[in-house]
Image (tube, rainbow, N blue to C red; front, side):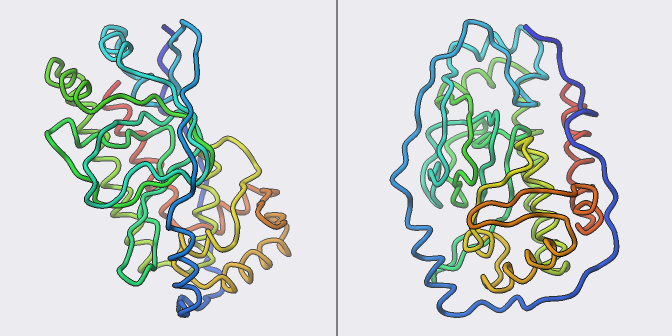
Length: 286
């Protein structure tokens, strides 16, 4: 087993700065129709991948567990590659598997009856998707979709519930993971209501960078508009201004980060708040 990673190295620290210009948040009928079409589901599938005998998880909860608890879970875990666009759960659907995210990013998305959608949380290696199932039969409250190609250790819910029932440490892990996810949902709701679209886009880009360790993010303007609940022209306008400021370079379907510190200054306070919450939760488990 590898040594446990300390929470202080999980995310880069940064200060948020002054507000930028305000943009429209109104969504047209055409935008809503585009949201309906893009969220119908992508014909993608999980891929089970063979791994070496060494168990060196990058998920922050798994890596923080004592060796004995890792061993308790290991035989039930399978390593999966999750392609962009794969839907892992739908609202009101019974949860069958728990995912310990290793890399990439998964979004929790709230869907409206008219097809409009908005992201309520971004999940990376600090997350366990489906952790509430440890408490009993659980159905999903939101759609979970792979935003950026991801990998994860997947475990059947029944095995997870049994393991948690046998270990106080694993029960604590399940509760802390659920607490962290709830904190993300609450912070994102406040951010969407109170912060301007430009600051939210900066926040979102920084959050993605924290999770994927890559300065290139492969996402379209349409998808970003859905995640931020703004019109596509609004995303295009903000991206243009960020590019003019030398913070990013945007090409179709790809955002390259040029000045991470500048994006940190343009982002809202939610970046720092969620980083600090993550550090505290992981430290509490360790």
